[in-house]
Length: 281
Ligand code: PMM
Image 1 (cartoon, rainbow, N blue to C red):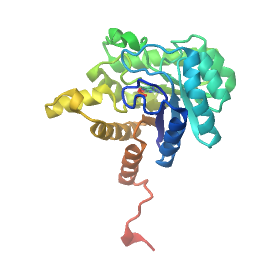
Image 2: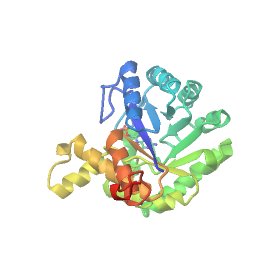
Image 3: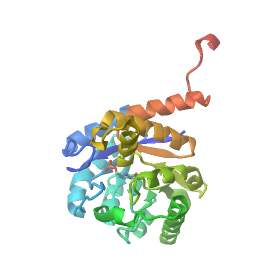
Image 4: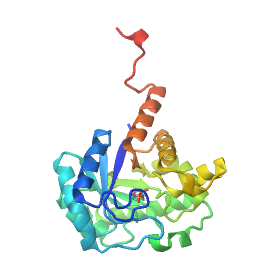
């Protein structure tokens, strides 16, 4: 069954819920609410990775995320820490995070993989070609899937060399990271092949620009006119398709809509808990 990771952004400038959950109390309440809606994992992040975003000092990042990680882990949630910094990753694991989510796959901070190895935490390795400030500069591909798979396989090798076995690794094609428009759809079409590399696979499409661009292009409107509600529909659909292509998990803002979409898809496949009244005892 595909797991749902709910996003708890503790940043002042995330493109989707900027500023709303700056306060730790509000972020904790948001995390608990996402869990009640069916999130299996809560992904806490204190640094925006939206296109053009500037880096945040690790001390500022830790001030934002550690109280939230500590409280959500103490409340019994499985918490992942969305960070590219080794020091933040370590501090978050000490505060109770069980997964380190590094969208850069260990590239932004060369010490991250070696730092996390002895902790036993699982590690999400994202496909990444450079910082958000200029991430589109490197969005040049011949064969998107082959290049994403090849580059992620090298990050797996780096993790193994640092002492992190493939059983602790989760691979993520990094939708929106160093990929423009259709390159994201190409990467998503490679989900089944990515899962074939061995480790678990996580897919994050939630409210991303390429969804808004696609919906705008197909409905003849502007990207800015595509609101969160429509993006959440696109997110739920892509999350179901990711699940059908073998994804272990999906990372979303609106947990309720994706959880329901996955329930409906499971019923279609005959794995749902719903039973026909005519067949009830
Ligand atoms: N996307 C964002 C941030 N963190 N982590 C993983 N593993 N995969 C993603 O696709 C991903 C991520 C950017 O989105 P946000 O700013 O809305 O959280």
